[in-house]
Figure 1 (tube, one colour):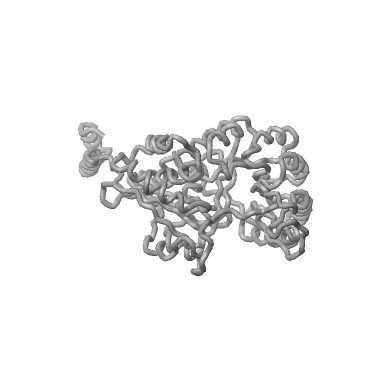
Figure 2: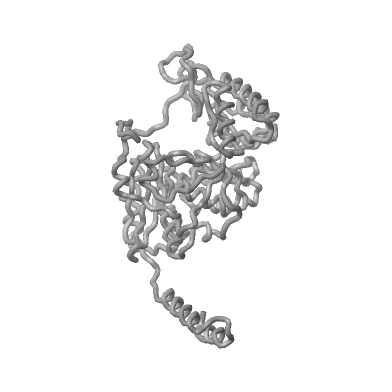
Length: 444
């Protein structure tokens, strides 16, 4: 505020002379403070829960001003680290830290070939760290920088699973008793590798020695599960289910039609990203709400589904898309087309990434649902300020930026390749193989 305006307000009694002087001093300090520049970009690689987490720390040339961002790509975590250290660090050195969208566009285009998961996650780490810095500068939580809250907290769903239908129903009842109103239900198929559920020791004939999965067996089993859940849980509990792309496209069409009578909250990932054209056929055949996007990396994947209103929930893994900056734009596009958000929120997302999720949840009007998360003591040892879950709702921090600090000494106690109890783990981090009885690999 200009000096003469402050003096006029003071003369009119709107503010005291002391308040006017303090405001003028603050305004001068703000004008005199140069925009922070990026001094260094560091990587914190840790696995406190046995899951590989990659967090980027961006330091500025202003003492004590830094930020954290999630760059976690568990299946190829060892590739994200050099992507940040060898490519983005020298690229960003000396650049202004306050131009978030401009830097995102520069990073996105700098590799020429783009929309891959390794570089998208690396970009996400930097992008989220820049938003953290901006919030710390402003003294505001990041959701305030996006326009403030549309709701008090994010309604969440939790996972009920088991090898037998009765076990799933009992698990769902316990989840509802904890305050959740939405439950994802998954049941195993005897002797087979059902997604999100255990399997029994029943022997299944096969032409190989690995995990086996037969789509028709799974679909019959899932329909029986939904029938039991509606009978035991009633209509008030919202049911969700993840197909995990394990069936053929035409089977997905039939399955989506068959589950319509059970009134699911949504049916997730009925087909793989390679088969997106089939969403048009599913949409023509039934009114089952659809969720998709966990494996998406590129606008070429999510744009047609949102534009043509072929899904009801966009379920992108925020770091895979490149961070908060692109995902707030995706959410805005979804709002225009009546598509709600349901950001992916598994255990292999760092607490910083979960805070980015809930920030979008509370700040975007078209929020749909959020996957629930819990943070064991080992994770809280490394990350202070984790978002809090209460009565089925996830709450954003009210402290500046993400409100999260990383104990780097504690992070070093949990290096890649070791579980929570110190046991040695496979370093590759790849997704396991699942095959049909004849040995054909299953998409998942």
